[in-house]
Amino acid sequence: MSQSFKNITLNREEFEELFRTHFIGLTYFARKIVEDMDGAKDIVHQVYINLWEKKNEIDLGTPLKSYLYTSVRNRCMNYIRDRKKFSTNEIPEIEESIDSENVLEYKETEARIQQAINELPEKCREIFLMNRYDGLRYNEVAAELNLSVKTVEAQMSKALKLLREKLSDLIIPIITWLFHSLNNW
Image (tube, rainbow, N blue to C red):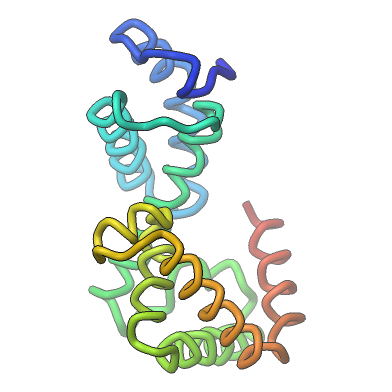
């Protein structure tokens, strides 16, 4: 099913077919990220509920499968972030895949990234977090903050430039960590 939203009107039968076709794959994809089958199922269900509720509003040139996987990934990141808020003394689950000698390096890198984000100007930081951590698109951030999309784009460019400058020495450790994490999926 490589149809895009622009080319279809999602009726009940098409939605059910989309659900049957992708639910299991999306659930296992989510489980690899959140390492919790019940949480993964809940995440995928929420993505489908959101898709059904907004079926007439969503207008993307994106294939449905890509939209679903992106939505699941974003919700997984939110799920991990929210769980992290409630268990501040635990090492995040994603760190369990990193061997013990790299955990300290990972925590230091994570702390530096968080510090750099915290040092962004207030509005810039708010827009960055809404886009990168909450998974909102520029137009959604703009609507929520009553700003123009151009302002959001400018603030995101500023945030990324400042983060690149502050974290330029971390590029190799971040790439190494990403490569290690992706190999464990």
